[in-house]
Length: 164
Image (cartoon, rainbow, N blue to C red; front, side, top):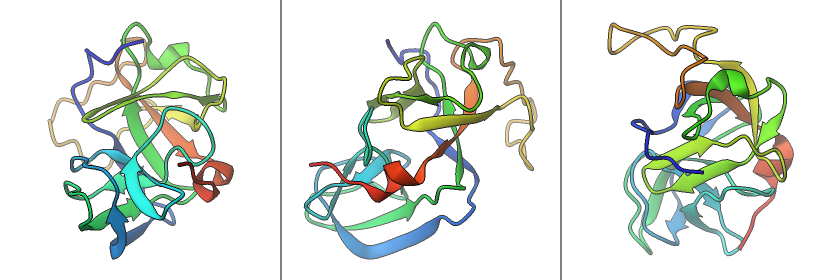
């Protein structure tokens, strides 16, 4: 798996019950604005993980500096996030309603084709529903093209857990 074809970070498509948190958590490791994050078992914010309950809890609003306070958005189970697929996979290769693992790295996140220990449930393809604004004026997320986006939700069991 790889994320060399990824050109954009995850984006919140529908906030649902997501909550903005400022100054409530300390940063446990450095991350960039737009990175997916998790609440670690020690109560700090760290980069998201690829699999397992507790792997993802939200998205960073700004770069995280260790031991500083965090500015983040914590997802709810009805929050919909747009994330690209990994290299060699198109959105149409993934089945809606199945839960897939992530490929995770600073500045590069993608939904894999692996369902074992998955955390991101595919609820749609980006070309199913054009967002309310198209900042490029050339919206083209053909679901048959590699690295295009899927819309995912994170189950409550993922959001409720934490990992070291």
